[in-house]
Image (cartoon, rainbow, N blue to C red; front, top):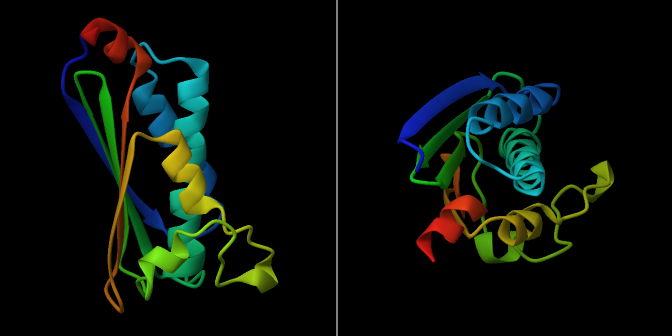
Length: 148
């Protein structure tokens, strides 16, 4: 079974850093016995959460900072993506499929739906004017198999 391990990274709220975030997290979790499907799902989830922070949390203000922390513990990956942006006024509405506050940017409004579908759990903590924290957890298939 995998040992407990963790990492964290912070970066400017610039759209081009979304790819960096994907690669950083993928590199870190690739130490595990992870399937390609699981890896792709986690990379997609990172993209969605980071893009939300940059576009919605900071309105693409490069002065903002996005924080990501990842913890691995016994085959479970816990990811936290945090911003200190404007927060979400109505989380329930924001989590509805196809809802977006940026239709002019051709946003699909599927970010939270994708996160929910690819992860075992999704928690959103937000405060208007103070930011948003998204916590995502996934139990990897090798750990589930060992558990049975």
